Image (cartoon, rainbow, N blue to C red):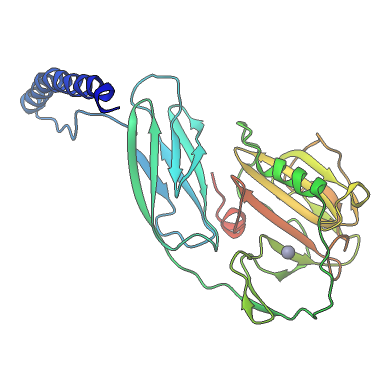
Length: 308
Ligand SMILES: [Zn+2]
């Protein structure tokens, strides 16, 4: 085993020595040129410039990681954070952006985002502040049967959240999907019978209004999912899924009826359905979940500041 590896090692070191000899004169030449011309060259090894916003994120925020290419290779870079790799999409000539989701389950503190591609690697660190979410204490009676979902609804929702459509359909801040009052905010945590539910957080915002009140698309997109109770959406109830493009999707559940069909293109503010209490709901309400690359994020920054 060892002897068969030896040629590999020697080839590796030979190649590295060769590269060093090749690079050194070029660096010296560039530095000399820079001195002569009076310009500052930070580093001769060019790789992706990286920027992240917001500069002071908290749990639930969507991080925007901007990069650009320094050569004319055709392959866009990717962004890796906490072991997950996210696609980048062109948002302007030679400008790429990845959306990196955070949630109440993200460990607060330092997160490193690494941009990788044919031009090498570059990384940037951002500090994610902790944030306190409301806590609910739920008491389940011993004999109570939990309503279970079906494979059909879970599979279809997984497929929706897995969409990474290159086209960006949303534009500007998202709009309110219902005129009802907000009955439950994003991120609420829960105790069940006194035990903290580690994985649970409220993956959306609830709006409460009358049965049959209108529900509007929060942003433009394609209706990628119309799920009916009769077809197996027993936990979520009647459901609409919207593909806003570039890994951003909306899920609206507990509807009483639909005003759209799968495949329809909708505009922000367009009527898409009607509030109801289908599925696991205690009364008429709309649960709107906003997903970024499959993770439920806080819609508030998307509603008020807009994510471009
Ligand atoms: Zn909800």
